[in-house]
Structure formats: C-alpha cells, structure tokens
Image (cartoon, rainbow, N blue to C red; front, top):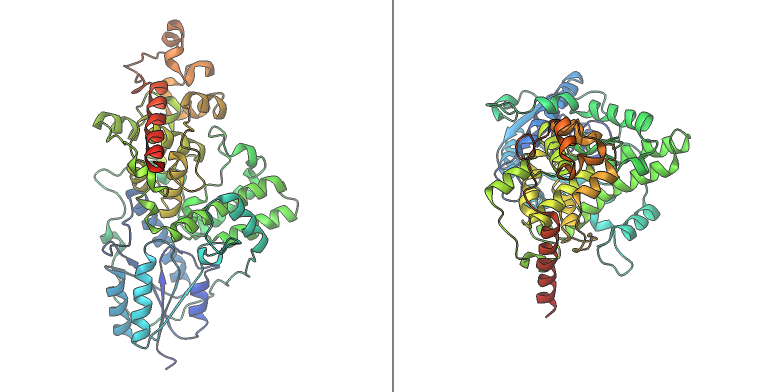
Length: 483
C-alpha cells in the first residue's frame, strides 16, 4: 500500500515553498507524481490569453528546473483535466490526488473530479494555497457575503490568522518513468511574430523571480507607497501581481514578509498597511467571483447589462487597443501594456473608463483585451477592476464618475514623464501641454515637432460630449430598472 503514489496536481500554485497541498502530499511519505495539466477543453476553464501563455511557459520551465534539482520530475499533460487525471490514476494505481483550491467557475471541474475519485476509492484532498482567507469563510454579521471592500477589509484584519509556512521539500521521491509532453510542443511562447521581447526585458517568471521581486520591493520601493502607488511616472507598485496570479508566491508569504518589515522598522507602517490592503483587494475580488461566478461576463449590477452599449467602430477599437486615441495618458497605458504585458493600476482605471464611458462600449470587450494582453490576467481581479471602473460592479465607483483623461494625467503624471516614455512623439512637449497637446500654441507644437493628425493623432472623440452621452445612457438604465 505504501508504494502506491500520490499525485500532486499543480494549477495556479507554481511554487515549492509554502504550498500547503504539496506539503500535505509529501507528508504521506509515498512516491509523488508532480503533474501539470494544460486544460483548454473544459468549458469552465477559461483558456489563457497570449501574454499569460508566455508567462506560463517560463514559469513551468522554472518550476521544472527546481523540481529536477531536488530529484523529481514535472509531468506535463494536455487535455480535459477530468480525463487526464482519471487516466493517470489508472496508469499508476495512485492512492490519492491532492491540489490547492480554485474559486471561480473552474471549481465545478474540481468538484466533479473529487466526487469521481472518491467514488473509485481514491483519496482526494484540496487546500487553500491562493488566498489570505477563503470566500466561504468570510461572512457578514448577517451571515451573507461581502459586497463592499471596506467592511471586508476590517473583518479580514480582525479575523486573519496567518498559518506557519508549509516547508519547502528538500527532495522528491519520484514514481518511476511516466510519459510527459514537451512544453515546446504546447507553443505557449509566441512566434510569427514573437511579440514578447519587451516582456522578457522586464519580467523574471518563476518562484525565485517572485521572491527576488518581493525582497526588492520591501527594501527599495515600499517607502512612500501609500501616495506613490498612484503615480505611473514613479511606479512604486510591487509588480507582484503576475507572480501571485500564477502562484509563484503566496499571499501568506507576502503578508509575513511585509509584517516583518514593519515590525523591524524597515518600512513605514502606513505604507505596509496600504500595501497589505491591496493584497486583500485581490481576496475581495475572488470573494465576489465565488459568490457570483458570472461576474466575468455579466455586470454584477445586472441592470447595467441594459445600458445602450455601443459596439464601437473598428477604427475606435483599434485606436484604443494600440494607443492611438489622441489622449496621451490613455495611449501611454495601452502602449505599456502591449510592450510589457503590464499596465500601472491607476492607468488601468483611466483607460478602462475611457473604453466603457467615453466610447460607451461594454466593459466585457475591454476585459477580454486585457485578458489576452496582461501577464497578470486574473479571472477575479480583471473582471472586478473593469466593473469597478465601469460602475457596474460591487463596491463600484458610482456610474456617474467618469475619469477625465487630461486631469488624471496632470494629477498623476505631472511632469509628463510617463507619457514621454511611452508616447515618445510627444516627449519634447512641455509638461504644461503634454496631456492636452491640442491646446498647445502652434509655435510650441512646431518646436516639439508635433503635427496633430500626422505625428500624433487628434482625439478620436470629444471627452465632454462622450461624458454627457455616457451619463444619459447609464441614467436611462437605472430609471428603467426602478420603473
């Protein structure tokens, strides 16, 4: 009996340290099969976008190297997870399958798998390896789920108990030779063309890259985070989001390290607490998705599905996607996204507001573009961020709040450094004019070698007109619902 192996199924937890499911599997003391399944066939499993595939390719390779260094092997297989696991259990006579839980629509896959395994006499256990607190463990005083972040955050702080870190395995006792697919055959890395060069310059996917990023953030960047996190020109954000997305680091690891930095006097308490609240916002997003699995494609406030959304012209959509809207802060963000697979959080709100309110195109279409182009595309965070900005979600900015791209640029990129970096054709404009170049005097434009409509596009839509149109459309939807 002791020679029957246990399967540990990696998913969004591509790390060895502080991995509770992996630690529990190893504690059984039997040979272990380390498995990753690329499931693009199950209807509840959303296929990864292009940027996320690029990250997954690098992260799996990094994980495989770490496992091999400890005497193990990562088994790669592609197909419906239910089929792949059933076949592997039969092939190896495995006694158990362990994994860390998911909280979106894909949890239905896990429920079916667990039921089928247990029916066949195979142990199936799951653990929390992704969140500070699981969604079903957080209840309001009335016993319901949370819909507003502030009370969620207060309740989480009051009840949170950070467990001891699950130990990193010293070595693996592998189970014989098993067929494993070649990751190169999965073609996760883009080709014809390879558009990932910019991403490779700024990211180091993998568990060791995640740890290094956390250390550098807490040592070099955290001071001033509370105010500086909104400044794309300074970029004081942690850049940990893709590492969290793929589980190369756990929120508990981050919490422990940040709390230690505060207690040791290595970082200001105000900055640490603000940072931890952002980690908790991720938990809140998963809390919302758990209680509303359709949040990824339907407005959380369902009445806003009835907004008279425009389809948007092909020219408008292409201008937004490729940073050619004529609004510098919007264009800078979209170009940063296209080049690096990332966009500063404040700018995400600005470009999402422009899409959903200035262009009045359903937020879902913008979310889909982010899903394909962000390296940190997370099913819960992505939808929650878009819905917050569009005014359709829980704890959302009121529907009548419309970001003014010029004022946002002036406030959060006051010297124009962010725009100058990503929209270099405007880099010679003085900061006074860089966020609204159409207002610049002719001689200033000429000196900066800016010809609107030629070297840089004119705005594709008038913001004041678009704002009034959006407010009318949203107001009409709310009135129809209350009628």
